Length: 297
Image 1: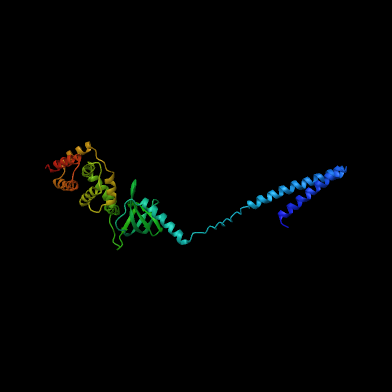
Image 2 (image 1 turned 120 degrees about the vertical axis):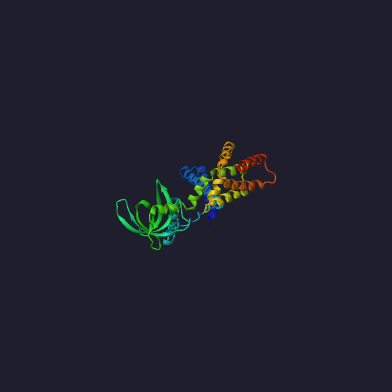
């Protein structure tokens, strides 16, 4: 018997009991009729409520909660992954600490005295140079199997990869430091600051400095000093500004420049100006002033 039939039978039984209780009451059998009436009413009302709940349950069946996936167990990183992470961290430190990297890395053997006066013999792979109040060598030390900083003042003796002794280690490493692209670039930007400012003023005279104008400026600077980091130079050129007051002062200073330097700069100025089919009036005025100043002996 399903739930629906059960509810109907209970309902009928309740009605029959109510009817029977009414007959007994009319006949004067109150002690029996009244309780039977109450039971009948309880059965009828209860069966109806139960039937209603059953219908609602059939129309809105309970939603089964999807089984949540089991949380995967954390697995330990493999030694290869750990090695990659360690190498990435090492490279990150290297990028921050080695300010001036040489174009090629060389291996040296040195006898080094620490702050306590202890001397050790070490093989190092040169990685670069840095300044932290003092000049330091940054190298991979095979004795410690790690990157280390060395003060040239504490190098007792120094040998190249062929075993030849190098005299005056500090002067030797300072000379290498001055050959690094970063040092050359910084030095060139200082030495040619006024020339660069004139070129930037001319390039920006029409309101914008274009890529082909920057390329001429980079080519000019590269012809003056070899081995520059042109990416660094280009970033610096992009950020340079020169106002009218500084422009006029530089033109006065240009009178003292060597003739050969003025001619090279004038050639660069002519190249930049020739890029424009219809020069801006401000650009034309700047070009004429530069031309007059650089043409004066």
